[in-house]
Image 1 (cartoon, rainbow, N blue to C red):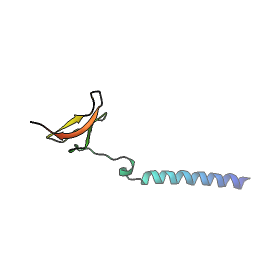
Image 2: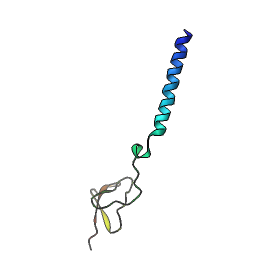
Image 3: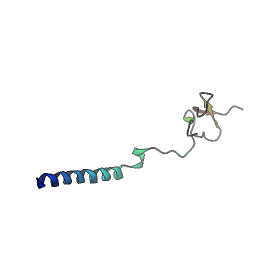
Image 4: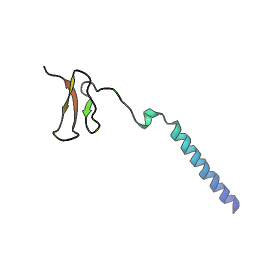
Amino acid sequence: MYTWISTKFVVLFLTFVLSVLFLVAIPDGVMAQRDDGCKTISQFCGGIVGFPCCKGLNCKLEGNFPDAGGVCVRQRF
């Protein structure tokens, strides 16, 4: 009986340790991609996050509501 309990404990402990190691080993790029820069032509802009377009571009929204998203287009003069 004690052997079964200790074996179960060892399996649970190893599962926990391996889970923590795998989570630490995952690179940031796999978890979530970060893009702190501006968006270029035809890239998504606006939205709930408010992604900005690069200088010389405007965000052409695809709706007339809060948090609407769109794509970056060249400014018209």
